[in-house]
View 1: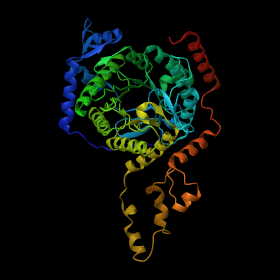
View 2 (view 1 turned 90 degrees about the vertical axis):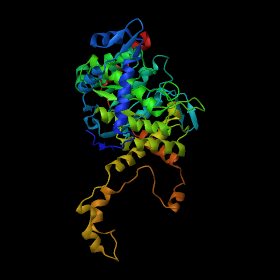
View 3 (view 1 turned 180 degrees about the vertical axis):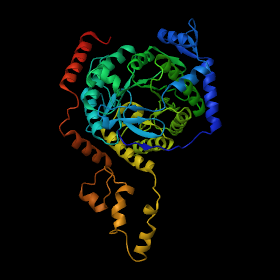
Length: 482
């Protein structure tokens, strides 16, 4: 299992604020309730104790159902990797960082200096890079397989991911038929369904439609839960568009939507692991675009982490994603703000490493830069160890007024533990920097990723699994999904 650094507990809300948001969310679940386009979900809640108006397609959720679901969902579980050394202990406290998000329609090309349509090979390279970078703890999509036929691109996208990483993977739950296919592929890689049940290394990423609405896409949760796959429920109402134009209003609505997902997950299978993952994006009022790096969104994410602690559930959110269109100073400042505040607030899983342009495209160079940011963040969260040995009072007296500490045994014993050593961000004199080509950090990041990708690709799945994945692709190509 990976050694995890515990996050902070920065509070942006008071205890009274948390309770007020909770009660307001319960009120929304009662009135107006959740509109369901899915008969399967209507049936589930009608059988499970919800108040269902089938004609109006509305589900009202009594507060006691939320209480029971909170008691049922585990507070701690292991998110497995295919390699046990990549396992993550998921609970309030530890923090982890992950590549990408949902399928991104473009890809930033370093040589062209602009985005272009992605191809499957881009997703393969991105996943190989994520596998090699030490501070990428879990993997999501950084682009899509744009060269695959429409409807098949998601299958090729996860084929590229499953073949090239042993880290935990978050997959988009795009309804029952897609989820069935994704899980068939995951089972093939695991060596069979029984092994996937024993060590589930994928998470089902469920995204309802705001405001206060669920669709047949939510039905993918049924397939995942039956196999013991953890559920990550992520509504994303935009402030000023599909939610009120206030952080508090957005939090209240997204919290209600997430609590509905929690109840749904526990009705399907009591005790299924659940990750509390409401997003808090804002609509930029000047461009009508969804933001990824706004300050109010960063505050909202900190509140999500705090609500997760309030419910004693692990949390997930964006954080390293940015508005910037290039891996530049704007991108770095936005990504560091999100990464830092998420860590200080104790967000369990922070996604979107490598994501640019509000999630419209990913960049391998930005992924490498974000890996270094996560490296820095983990050192920040480790804090300062204060002991008699670390203070070194006797050492200070021994060195006295005229000496130095460079050659002292105390320095040799402690500098590697207390000092941060960057991997990407170079510490050079000006002369050294000039002599070595006066390279920008973008150039340095590009060189690092090329060095990683020039190594022979590791063999991460068996020949049998390769054949099974090939069979799935052939079937989808011949007959489509389902």
